[in-house]
Image (cartoon, rainbow over all chains, first blue to last red; front, side, top):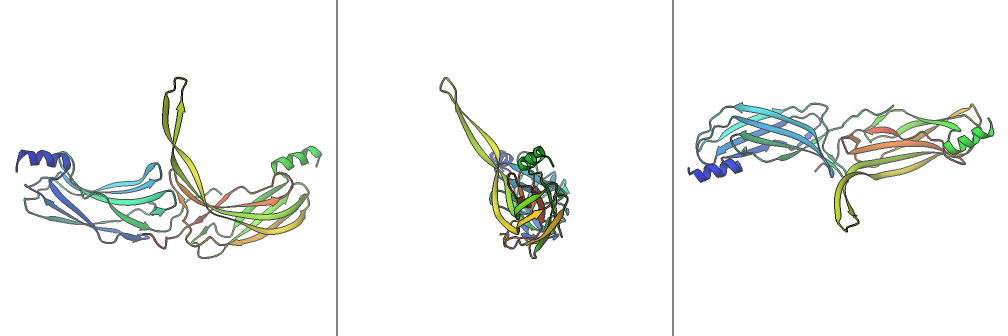
Length: 143
Length: 162
């Protein structure tokens, strides 16, 4: 592995391929989010400090507001050897009070999940993968 | 009731107190919504019509560009995220016509309606909202006495989410 590849990987997060599969992309009511994460080094053995997930709900019109943002650590201080592929399965139970996916005319509430490796430089990641949370919501209204 | 009080009521719509009482404040949209409109006359009222407005209104932010030119001809452009509204649904039900409500008398009317199919459910976010509301009013000379907008909840899963 040359020094230029290492520098490139540091900047781009290209030291590993991180894939994230969502078992069911439309969750009804309180169904959990079931995930499969696969990590494979693109070159030499890697030593991520953490393998972690981020789950986020964003309200978007011309402004962007984070309605939910949580990180889940899958494993810490690991080694994945050159040519090896490591997998994790993870089930996320979202809290009852989180918002549903909303598609209105001028705004949206969208959910996404991302798997990443905590490494020096840019963290290799799967990129944001969308999923839909379809449920009936309740809100307090003025009496 | 003196003439000044009548003039005040004409301007403010204070001749009657109007309120709404829902049978259920939350609906999943599959059944009829029932509520009572109540009016208590604080003065003699000749009412042309008792009505109920129903609306579904989306509130959102929209980026707006502001351009100004100063005395030197320098153009400055700024942006702001302004609050905008989009009425998804607007309907008025007529509950009674040509009635008189004498001072001190209370009357009530039953109203029934349904939300349209495919309606966006209630949402309360940070900048964005989807609200379903009703407002009952008495059509009278001057300002109509009304209940103000009262929210009910449309709480349901969405049929086609993708």
